[in-house]
Structure formats: structure tokens, C-alpha cells
Amino acid sequence: MSNLFEPYQIRDLLVRDRFMRSATTSAYADEKGIVNDTIIKHYERMSRGEVGLIVKGHLYIMDNGKAHKGMAGISHDEHIPMLKKLTDAVHKHDGHIVAQINHAGVTYQPDRAGPSNYSEEDWTAREMSTDEIEAIIEGFGDAAERAIQAGFDGVQIHGAHGYLISQFLSRDVNKRNDKWGGNLKKRMRLALDVYDEVRGRIGNDPVLIKLNSDDFSPNGFTVEDAIQVAKALSEKGIDLIEISGGGRGRKPELRERARHPDHPEADFAGHAEKIRKAIKPTPMALVSGFKTLAAMEKAVEEDLTDMVSLSRPFIREPGLVANLKKDQKEATCIRCDACRANFGVAMMQCLLE
Image 1 (cartoon, rainbow, N blue to C red):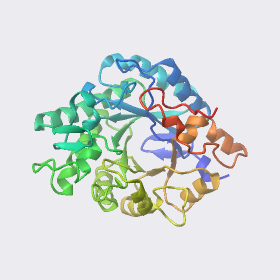
Image 2: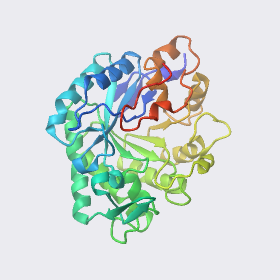
Image 3: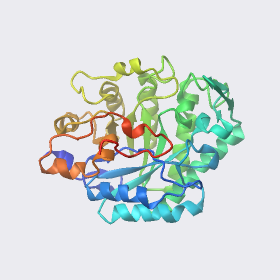
Image 4: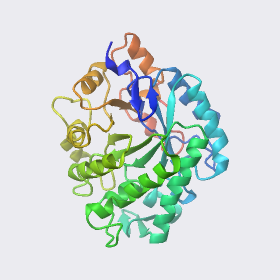
């Protein structure tokens, strides 16, 4: 049997296989950001279906960091009881789960604020003050502590997809000329300081990050930048880096620059190979595009990645890993993206069922 189905060690956490559920946002939280039983049942189904490591869809660390309606929070102690019910449901079936913690930055509509004054189409964001940035770093630490109190096995910092940390990394969004912006070393400071804060709060529990391999904007955050940020995090002791892609100013046609001829299913395989060489032996996961068991096995066997991370396939098929372990050869998800049609309303439903 493929080593995809063998246990894998992340710091002191032994997960049952090399399948990772990539954090996928949903809209099953009330106006206070408290999750409900509908979404808890979905996480339980994934754990029962033998997913090795589940990453909970992003949780806002502060009330002014909420990305969309229906997003769950971890900004107050009142969020903990239902999150504990969620982690208990996962652990009941021998799964493991980490909390993805996030700040929306310029996508927080009531008061759009980010690294610098920034505009997109019909809106403009203001520049955050130094005091606000430092409060956000502390907020990540507070959220990490709550995650452990809620029974999560660790945390994943969201550093991708055009949210706050990703915004600071982008030379297009971050136009500051202080210690938080300018050259890449300064633009990555927020990511590194957040890591230090989280590590200082939760000690030996696993700390992961989701990082863009490329914003797929003309020059906002490139793979060359990603390599340097990943190396810096690796040197600090990050426990796993999940490679993804897509930030502010993304252009779909630029996604082609991340491709790899030997791994055509994995959207970011070409960039992932370069990052892998720079950070090894730091554990790495790769997300986006995987469909067939053969492609997943090849990615691990050829040392492109340590873990195979999936999102949409688990929306349609929470029991996918157990099915692949039997005799199924590929995911049944066809990547039609209908599950994302109601963003902020009722995401994480396969509409083909």
C-alpha cells in the first residue's frame, strides 16, 4: 500500500496518514461567529472518513478581522464551547484538527484597513497604524491560546489568499516605508512576528502556516519571494508549510507559471518544487488540483511534498480517504466550483448531490 496511508509525524503530533484537509471557509456561524451543529457534523464525517489532518476553515482573530458573513470566530472566549464540541467530534474518530487563524485586513468591509492605502475597483482601504499592527500580532497569540483551550491539536496561520499577512507580503499592496514595509525582509516581518507570538503562546504544540507560492499578480508576491519567506519560517522552526497560491491583484492567466510538466494535476507543483528544495527537511503540504490517487502517490513518492492537501474533494466526499484506501482510484469532485457559488451564504455544500 502507498505510504500516503501511513502515519506522519508533525512535531509531536502523529497523524494517521498523509492526507490533509485544506482549510475551507464556510458560512455556518451566527452573527457572533459561533459555529453550529451543521458544520460540526461535516467535520465529524471527514474524521470518520479517515482524513489524517483537518484544518478548520479560517477563524477571525479579532472582530475587525472578519472576512465575510457567516465566518466563524475565535476572538472571544464565548467561541470556545462550540469549537470544543467540533474538536471533540473529530477526536472521537481518531482524527486530528488544527485551527486556521486569520485577519481579513482590507477585506473587512466596515473598516477596510491594511498595510497601506489601497484601492480595488469600487473600494479603498486605509493604512493601519503601528499600534493597530502590534495589536493584531497580540490578537493572533490570543487566538492561538483559545484554539488550544478549545481542543485543537495546533494552529495554522493564514498567510495566503490576499488576507492580511498576504497583503503585507505583497509589494503591490504594501507600500509602507517603515519597519513593516519596503524590501521583502520588512514586508515579511508581520508573518515572522506573528509566528513568534503564536509559538510563544502555545509552546510545543504544532504551528503551521498556509503560504502563497505566488500571488499570480504581475509582481505582487512571486515564487522568488515565497522561497525567501519559507526559508525564514523554516529557520525559525515552523512545523509545516502548506503551499497554495492567489493573492490581491491575481490574474488567472498567470497561474500557468506555477505548473510542472511531471505533475500536471497539482496546480502549483512547479513552484512547490523550488520551495521544497529551499526548506527541506521542514514538512510541506501542497494543495490544489489533486484528483487521482496515482497523482497523489507520485507527488509523495517523488518527494514533491510530504502531505497531499485537498479542499473541494472533501466537500463532495468527506469519506474520500477511506474510499481511496479501499479501491477507489480518484475523487468524484469535478471542480465545477458550484460549491463556492453562495460565498458568505452557504458555502461548503456540493450542489451536484
